[in-house]
Image (tube, rainbow, N blue to C red; front, side, top):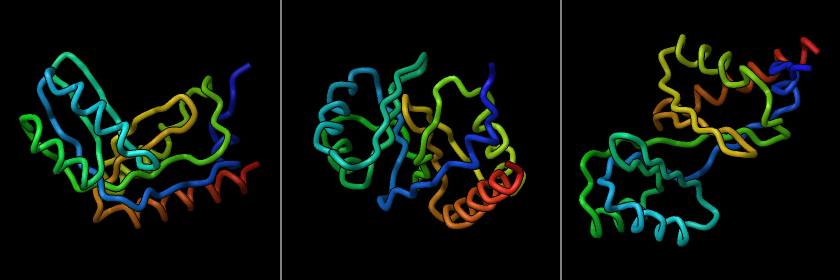
Length: 147
């Protein structure tokens, strides 16, 4: 039986991480340096992605400066803030982020999704984070009303 994503949203809370974040485009050789930064960034959001193009890291301000001193940074995007789900999110729910991404995109807000094993995360440009948070909170309220 499939899980209704709107029912999941109806019981969801939202967490806004307080730090500023940056997405860095790094070479493959930088993976170990980035992993070391993650160990020191306890309590802060961080993300490491290795794909067919390179290594990407999403890290907070202090980690950016450390990485720039240790490895070549090909490009840097941001500043972002991270909005995360903060409630029970079944791993098998299908279409969970779709309606929220559509809502934000229709309002001209860039939202970069990253899914974790327990929570989902959206990277929002810092200048849009308050508006994005209000839109998602409104979406959650409507989801509650529909249940």
